[in-house]
Every structure is written in structure tokens, then in C-alpha cells.
Image (cartoon, rainbow, N blue to C red):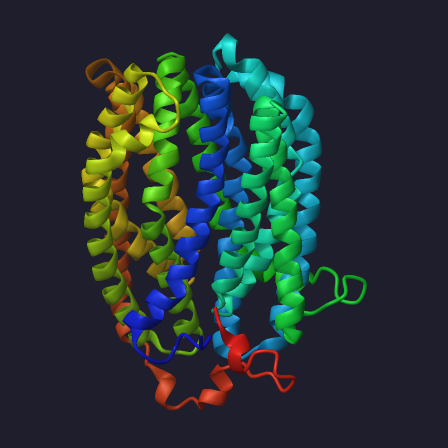
Length: 469
């Protein structure tokens, strides 16, 4: 596949770039499902609730990594559009060292703090021990996730969405095999599922590094020669800190909501956390189309093709709307059956079905919000996007507590759907605000030689069949 996303049919380019992202996201979620599915059916509902109770804690670190590296991806895409080849190598080396080191320290600190954190979240006493051993083992994989996401982000910026898919494919295979051995055969329970996850994350990281070294000569580097570039870190922080702060704040907010949910008892915890596992898979096409829009817009803005960037938003919005409606129909029909696969009681399954009925009709709202967010982030408007996300989270938390007496445990779904409406309105207003400025900006693509906008490699590392992605 051509990696210059500033040329050709927007619809076809967006689909070709996004499908591998969707598939890799699906595989990532599937191996999370495997943990829950095997543990729930082998160890029972309490063990599953224990794993679910740790989700918001672990996701705090994962979402910060993903948020930060989403900014790295936008920076890499813009530099690619500008034709700045050497800068890509410095971006990769600088953020690999920085994030790998930072999250190694965080993991080392986090392991002994699991007890007080679980207590702070008012975790039900009968699931604390399971949650503790599961979370402590997962911490060991966080530094590897940081390195993997850095490599994946730079590759996406270059237009290569195949590498993350292949990496996660390998990871998923390893995870499923180890889950079967550790949980079903050796009966290590939640600890075995966590160990399988960490080993698979290590494998995924090694694979993506090997893939990058083999396919891209321009991204090969030695840490002792390049190391961390201060100027790159400062430049990258402009793009990466806002989404990282927003994701981190959202995860802290999710901890607050986790504590709120824990107050309804372990049955609601098991039902809603399992529903969210399914929901997170269902909405992946929406999320990844938003990421695809961001990357296409970033490359086109880097190549001074502002009008084409707007067309990316229009085309992407139509696609996301259609996909969202299809996903709504799917979850309304199959949601209950999917929940029942995880070994929950009939009462818990009913709670999960009610959750889906409450939230699925708003998928189209969420989809349009993600399309606008992708456009704004692709233009470099990361700070506003982050602030808007934090504001929407605040609305969700306030609504959850304010209307709990009226809606009971279903307030969790209603509050989230309402926050999506707020997010869409805020992003739309920002988009409209930016239009006069964008209309005054010329589209210089006709004046810019294509060779100055496309990276070519004299070593052949980015030509021919190796340009798939």
C-alpha cells in the first residue's frame, strides 16, 4: 500500500489505512476477552469481578501511553508530509527511551501500592485478593506497552497500519495459548491470566521492533549515538501532553466511576465491566476511523493540502455514521448473548442487556464526535481536544452521582451517553470556529513538487512491496 496519504481517493485510502487498525484493535480486545472468558468459566463470577475491579487502575496507565503516543503519531505524520526524513528517526529514539524509562519506574512503584489503591476504590472485600495478584503481575508489562506504542505510533504516522496489526496478531496467539496452559491446565487462576498477558506483550514489542528494523532503514538507530533529543521532546510535548493529560484525567475519572459502580455490589461490577469489555470491541471501528481521519488530516496539513484535509473529514464522517448505525443494530440483537458467554449469572446478564439497550442508540453521536476529534487533532489542535475530553468526563461524573437515585445502576450508561452529546457539540463548535481561519489558508499542493512531500528511500526500504500497511 502507498504510504503517501495525500494522494488518491480519500474513501479508499481511509478504508485501506483503517481496516488494519480495526483488526489490530479487535485482536487486542479479543485477548482481553480471552482472559475474562477463561477465568469466568473456569474460576467463576467472583474471580471475573476481581479482574474487572482492576480494569480502571490498569487502564489509567495504558490510556496515558496511548494518549501520549497518539500525539507522537500526529507529529510523525506531519513531518512525513513535510518530507523531513531524519526527524522521524529522532522522534522514534527519543520517545522510546523516554517512555520506556518513565513507565519502568511507574511499574516499580505501582506494584507495592496495589493494596491501598484497591482499598481507596472501595473494592468489595471478597474480590480484593484476586484483583491484587492480577494487577501486580500486569504492572510488569507496562514498560513494554510504552515501547510498543511508540513504535506503532511512528509507523502509523508514516502510513503503515499493517505493522500494529501483525504485532497484535502474534501477541494474541501467544496470549490465547498461554491462557489455556496457565488457567485451564495449570489452574493458576487470575494470576495465570495476567502472566499470559505480560508475556504476550513482551512478544508483541519484540516483533514490532524487529519489523521496523527490517522494513525501514530510515528508522534504524543506536541509542548510544542518537539517544534523546531535547528539541524533539519539546516539540513532541506540544502534541503529546494534551491527549496524555486528557487520557490520564479520564482514567482518574474512571477510577471515581469505578468506586461509584462498586457501591452497587459485585453483581453489578461483574455485569457492567463485562459489558464494557464487549462495548470496547464494538466501538473499535468508530475509534479507529477517528484515528485514521487524524493521520490523513495530519499528512495533508503537513503537505499544505488544507482543502483535502476538510474532504477527509466529510468522507470520514459519512463512513463513521454508517458504521455506527450498523454497530447499534448488532449490539441490540446480540448483546445479551455475548454477555452470557462469560459465565455470569442470569441476573448479571440481565443487567448487562439493560446497559446495552441504554447506550447503543447513541453510538452515532459518539462516532460523529470522534470524526471531528480526528480532524481537530490532525490539524494540531491537541490542547482543545484534550480540554473537551476532560470537560465531557466531568459531565459524566456529575450526571452519574446526580441521577443515581432516579436511574439506579443504569445511570452509568445514561451518564456516558449524555457526555457523548456534550462532546459532539463542543467539537462541532470548535470546528465551526476554525473555519474562517482555514478558508484563508491556501492549498499549496499544486505548487509543491510531489518529491518534496513523499519520503523515498534510496536503499529501497520504503519502496515496492515493502510499502504495504
